Amino acid sequence: MPILGRHGRAQSQDSPPIFRTARYQFTLIRPPAELRPAVLNDLRGRATSLAAVPGKVLLINLWATWCEACRIDLPMLERFHVAMGDRVAVAAISMDTSGHAEVGSYLEKLTIHRLPILLDPDGRLANNSTERPAQLTAYGLPITYLIDAAGRVEGYIAGAADWLADDAQRLLAYYSST
Image (tube, rainbow, N blue to C red; front, side, top):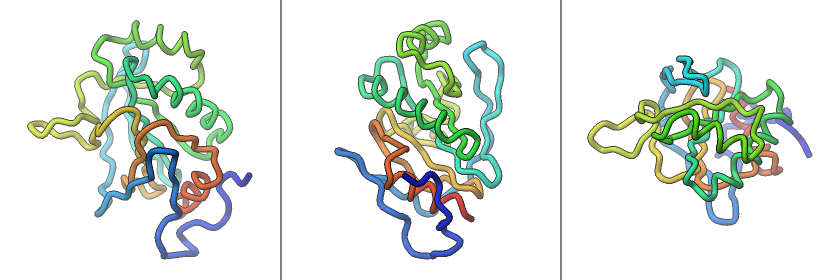
């Protein structure tokens, strides 16, 4: 299975490869918007800046402790994060309002230890409000946004997604070239 092959967008201007799960398909956002840095807290309560990583694809996963599909998605995302090393950046953003202790306990039960976790209880980065919209829309949870190597929010996929699958790897390779 290729992990970020050599054929990215730099060699091809056609549409991105299709990535779909049993229920959802990667949805393009047009026009793509630049991801602006957002300050969120980590599990220890420290302010941390989340920003696009120049030259690298970033996956931003939105999830919550009450989300049943997140129990499946988070372990798959952690396996992906470990397998990819520093080739793709990953940030799993908890939308919980209950605080870092409950989120930490939930992650411990799922044995999630290596996945970068940030908290967004106020919906600063993502929400579904029309009154105070954020950069990313939480259409449902889990949902994963793909930010390309140039820092543009290109699209998203709802539900649990296996980013190690061949079609996901082709999509990542496409967006890894600017």
